[in-house]
Length: 116
Length: 112
Picture (cartoon, rainbow over the protein chains, first blue to last red):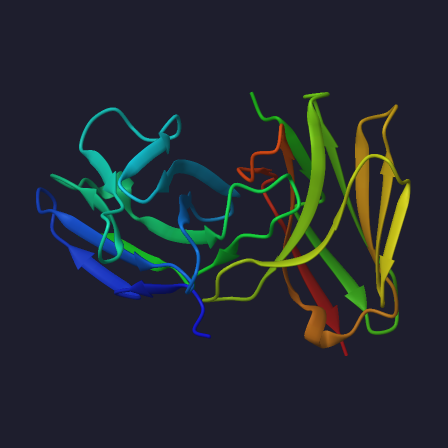
């Protein structure tokens, strides 16, 4: 059973370009969470999605950022018109259900975005 | 406002020593407290977790101590090994939601 797969592992974009980060959850998992990690900081929650639905996007910046989890295919985190401050590691996690506080979510290895 | 405060930011321990990382939280609705271990270039992995109905949980060399009245919890790593060198994050979640709030992390280095 493959773990959470994120790609690409590393992504370099010039300022103003679009970045697309992909996340394939573990088999049987229907819940996906995106986090952002800045150097020497913890993980900041961005968005929680189920298939075809955004459940909680309270951590998403209001502009330039969007996320989707279509019925078929991976979850996508899209960042439009990237700026240097978007440089960070972006992690995806998945779980089989919204846990009763004890359902572990498994993290992918992350995508490290560098904006030059 | 940081809801989960973690200290120290970095920790150096000799092999065989005890590593202690502390966390404090504000939100009394939190009812699930996991610890994550992250190696460089990897995603965080759940290490051990506790609920507030117990004051201590032990798994191998790793122990969580929980003080509900003080709203504090800590991770103890006994007989620390060089392979334990990693970044450790405490977290807290509430209301049946998985979505935890993370501390800023502690970089642990265990010298051989």
